[in-house]
Length: 144
Image (cartoon, rainbow, N blue to C red; front, top):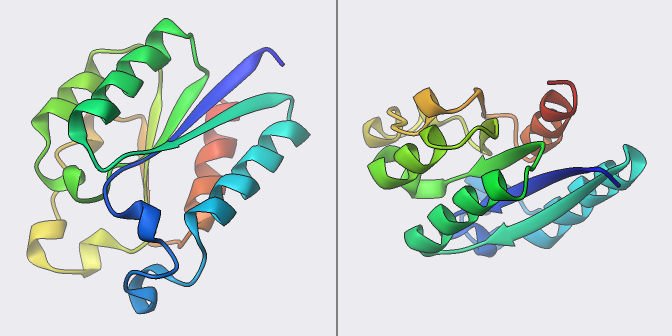
């Protein structure tokens, strides 16, 4: 496989299916990753799935994606969306396109969630479509 997409998930996303299922649903992160890996296989693309609760680790992985010449990054930064200028700068500093994904509609939630400091550095943002947003991001990157 010549193409590679990195699927990154930030803090608390390891708790999908357990944490606030009324907001985030019952699907687990393992299930989301399995779905995107299968899409990758069906489209001749390797999908590398990673999750971390640590900002610096996510930044390292973003920078590594540029070095590894990834086709793109599907990224749910979790709460870092709203305040991590370091992650925003890491995204802005690479040539790999990044699609920001949010399971819930961040614009329909608490006021502090309405602002994404990372979105402006991304190719696009998908918000509020549940875990289907990860699939849409995959197709967007495959067609870019």
